[in-house]
Each structure stands twice: as structure tokens, then as C-alpha cells.
Image (cartoon, rainbow, N blue to C red; front, side):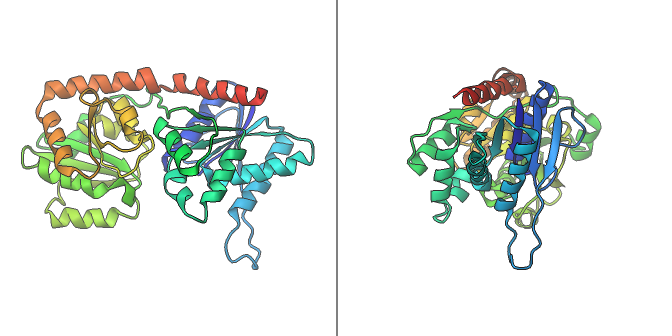
Length: 375
């Protein structure tokens, strides 16, 4: 197959999943063409069968704002026509699915019937797509896609409910390469972070309000009343300054380590004892899966697709959104009980391998592509 993949090239989960999917498809012998305004974050080395096409932005002075959606459509048309693509797979509804629909309509004039598959990742449905000005357009682009997938059952139901559509949506969960994400403890790194043998909590996100990163610092404050602990905050974003202010206010500035954006996550996760995810909204929880693959139990809020990923009292604990006291209690329970935490660690790793391993999920996408192409 010749497949076009369109995604945001940034640090977030949708771009990571789209890029890793494309790399896996290329290794299977499929020809994959990435279309975006920048090189995808995880496409950092040469991979046979992968091609990248940059979306050029117009600098015409009449346009006060850049017309990315239309520029993307033009690039899609060019790649589809000259590379003879069989299928275009877009990740994130806005504006990718809309651009894909426009490309399909133009190509129909040339008797070309490119198939369009849209994968919904979360905030395109639960936040941005519910803006009154966007809602009709998102609904239309979903209904007009030849195939639609969602990364969790929660997101599928949310889409059907919010947009009042009867579209058949296939649930294909996010995935992980457990040969890359595995526990390989680095004692030098751990000793540097926790020189006195403190327990290490970790959180990874883009530091947006919806991630509630400040809750992780409030959890640490409660944990430290029972045992010595440190908190690693990986990532960056608009809430970082507020987190730094809160750490100083609570006199935790020496116990909260801001690591910024990091590519070598397995090393950081492997040095950690517990992963915190107190999000307000989480359609799947890819960073939690990455932690589980590295044998790190997760304490999270019970929102979105997290209950589909985390097994209560087996791979971690889930609590009501915003219940910092409960999350702290669960954290203390695991951090004080080495034997229990080791069992949870093994359970987490096994769940990642048995349910979300890349070799299990990518074939689901291939079968879905074949289904759409033959329809």
C-alpha cells in the first residue's frame, strides 16, 4: 500500500502515535508519505519507505493570517496525484480531516477516489471540536470520512454523543514498542536525583491546564509527610511557571526537578517508582502506557480512557478527578510497600506487552485499511 499520513509534528501524543505507526508500516513494506508543516518529532532518522512532504505556507500580504488548512489541502492533492497514494490517514480532526475531505472532492473531478481515514485522538473532539464555530465542521468531516478510528472506547462514545452521528467508529488503542520502553535502571541517574535513597515520583505532559500538573506537587507535599520523596516533571508548556511558583510556595523547590522536554524517556521512567497522571481529561493516556511498559505503576484520575488502560489495584490506582488526598494515599501505600509495588510493576509491564504492544496494534490498522479500500 501507498499511504499518506498527516499529523501535527509536535511533542504531543497524536503526533507520536502517527509517526510510530508510519515507521511500523514502512518496516512492513508499505510506502508511507508524511505531510505536515515540519518534520514529525519522532521521525529523527532515516527509515526506508518513508518520505516527508513539507506544507509550504503562503506569504501573500493580503492574507493577514496563514491559511494552513488550504495549504495542507494543496499539498495533499500534489502528493496523492504524483505518488499515486491508495489511502490518506489523517490524525486529529481539525483541520486535517477537513483538508482531506476537500482533497477528495477535487480529485473526484479527475475520477480519482482516494480513501480518507480519520483517527480521533482526544482534544480535537472533547475541547477544540466542541467550540460552537467548529462543531458543525468537525461533525461533517467525521461523517464524510471513509473510515474513522478512535484511540479508546471512551472517545468513541464521546464522539457519537457530542456530535449526534451514527458513524461506525473503530476503536484501535494507542500502542507502545516494549523493546524500546522497558525497565533498564540507571543507578547513576537515580543517585543524582535521590542521593539519600528517596522515592521518585514522575509526571510527563505538555503542562496544559487540562493536565493539572500542579496536583502532582500537592501530592508530593502529602507524600513527604510520610516518607522522603522527589518529583520529576518532564515536559514544558504554559503551566510550568505556575508549577515553579507553587513548588517555591510549598518549600519544595529542592524536591521538584523540572527536566523540560526529554527524548530519552525510558531512562527517566526506569529510575522512577511511581507515575502520576491527575488529568482533567485524558482520552487514552499514552505517557501512562509508556510508564507501565517500563514497569512503573500509575496513580491517576478516573477520567476518559484511563480506566481502560489502568487496572485498579493491579497495575496502579485511579481516583476521582481532583481528589489529591486519595491519590496521595494511594501513592503512599505503594511507595511504602516494596513487595506490593514490585507486583504492580510486573503487572504493568505484562499489561503493556499483552494488550498494547506495537506488533498487536499495527496489524489492526492494516486490516482496517484493507477493509476501507475494499468497501
